[in-house]
Amino acid sequence: MKQRENFGSKLGIIMATAGSALGLGNIYRFPCEAGANGGGAFLIVYLAIALVIGTPLMISEFVIGRRSHSNPIGAFRLLSGKRNVWPVVGYLGVLCAFLILAFYTTVAGWTLGYLGKSVANHFAGQDLGQIQAQFTAFTNHPWLPLLCQMLFLAMTAFVVARGVKNGIERWSKILMPMLLVIMVVLCVKSLTLSGAGDGLRFLFRPDFSKIDGHVLISALGQSFFSLSIGMGALITYGSYIGSKDNMTSSAVSVVLADTLVAVLAGVIIFPAAFTFGIQPEAGASLAFTTLPMIFQQMTGGYIFCLLFFLLLVIATLTSTISLLEVIVAALSEELQISRTKAAIVGALGTAVIGLLATLSFRDGSSLLVGGKTVFDLLDHLTASYFMPIGGLLIVLFVGWKMKRADVMDELTNGGSLRAGIRRGIYLIIRYLAPVAIGVIFVSQLVRL
Ligand code: PFF
Image: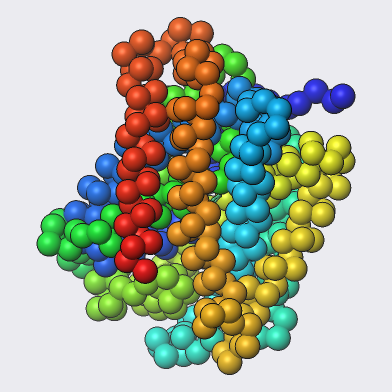
């Protein structure tokens, strides 16, 4: 059998994992969640959840991946012994990756379309109403958003088919530094605008009165989505980590980088919004209407708009790569087919559901399930159910099903991690993380 590939270096692991984590979740979801849920207070809650639950869960996924050197389905099968139900967690993870990829590529396609629009200077001289009308026209166009989505899927499949080292690692190492440079340039621009003070106050001023159960749930959902945890993406990436690499420090670096980028996105968006007197709004309308509007009012707006959409395309591409990799690793190893074949099958399968998600965005679309668009349904199902349940089962598996000695062995990296830290992480995985996820998840169900 062909030897399984590994990442070539620790830097490669961090870049690829950060590539998976950094995405639309950071750049347009986080700033809005923070703005709506108490600014700085949300940030504190988010950081606490990312560190106390997110980091141990990420480490748990790496432990399962590296111990088994297998895709999520194979990993649970190998580590749990014969005749066990645990592989179901692997199947759920792969299904979750597939569902996320389907709706994520809808927006990914828009980012590509909007990169094209910014190159062609489509926003010049337009007011907010016209820019909003452009967005509606784009999402309702008979084939353009579908074509953009398919192109994005093809780019993703191209990179994934090339393999772990030559595809994923190589591209992450090129794209991630680009992303950081673009973010810094945009941040500097935003901070020199006159509304910088108001924008930063909106983002950072802690309003603790807003913190309630709902905010805890939002922060949990946001952290799982943003860190790509709870569904097997990082089990898959973990399976390519070599035995000498320190997974714990890699996980901490990725969590910090992910949070930093989310905060930087807020630092880019809010000062600009306040400078031009535009109410910061959530989600799609922010990235695809408010921001183009803001850019075209500022000096050098053409280039900053272009950089912003390039940033979105890059961040999104490294995330879709990790989602498709979950499917490709599972298909190629479980069915013994080549990566290229698996990438094509995975992308085509995703295309079918993905097209429905994109079509459901049209005005008057009848693609509704229980009053929700296919897009919203997939988003809600994965973020509110699949990921928290998957995350809970993953920490329970590492904390209670795997042998303690094996987990410790994975955590030490040949003795490089101090015993106290190792034990602390293990206790968090075994007790604190499952209880915290369980309590937050159940409180969400009770509120329904
Ligand atoms: N973490 C990505 C983001 O913040 O946009 C989304 C994501 C990517 C979720 C990969 C899950 C995943 F496996």
